[in-house]
Length: 140
Image (cartoon, rainbow, N blue to C red; front, side, top):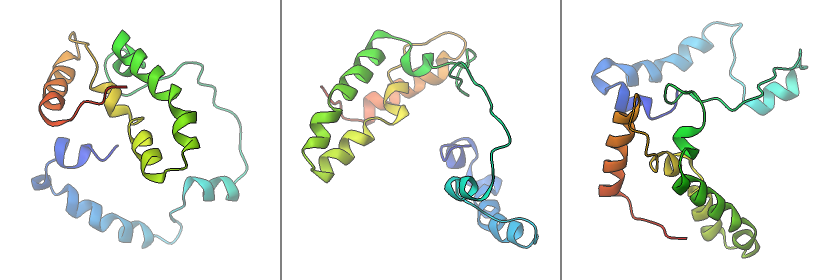
């Protein structure tokens, strides 16, 4: 689950925030359970095998593919242009500019450009209208 789940899909009244506050201490009270970062897991355990995923998959939409992010010409163009800027932006060594550029890579920017309006279109339609009302537009 991503952070969007908490507060948007699961309201505070559900007790989700209380649950999240308590869960670390409950997990740590069970002596065989510990927390590790992905890097710590890699350093600690040997790989047991490979998991082959030949196609990109997603939780979004009924297609379960990348079409929510790259399903139209606008999304493809925006993705192409943002990556065209990568070398130039990084060569500036300007931390603020690099940070701003990196933030433009977040999946939400491309997701909100979706023009899908069929089975999953209601979510996209609501988000597109929300973004148009609240977010500045970056023209590359």
